[in-house]
Image (tube, rainbow, N blue to C red; front, side, top):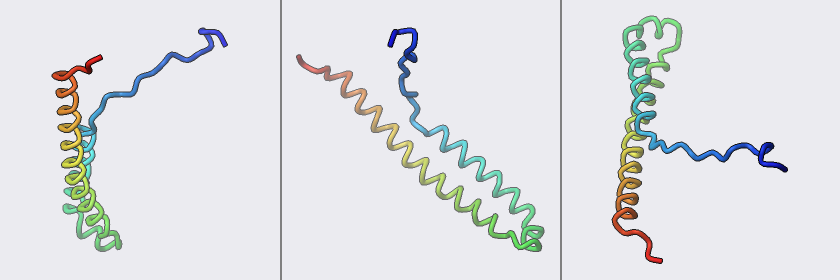
Length: 89
């Protein structure tokens, strides 16, 4: 196989996930607000469970944010350590 036929090497995207989790949580919060404003209509149609789905989305998003932030901070600590202590060899 020649080099023309090979796809270029790709590198993984360096994303810590914090922004993604925050955006997702904010979207759940907006959906929760809409559901609160439309609570009577949801109850009449038998879809009041949508409200609780949004509550769960916000709650899990906050837990995910905590996890993603701790993960990001740990990765930064490892990178700083590796920068301060280059391998001997």
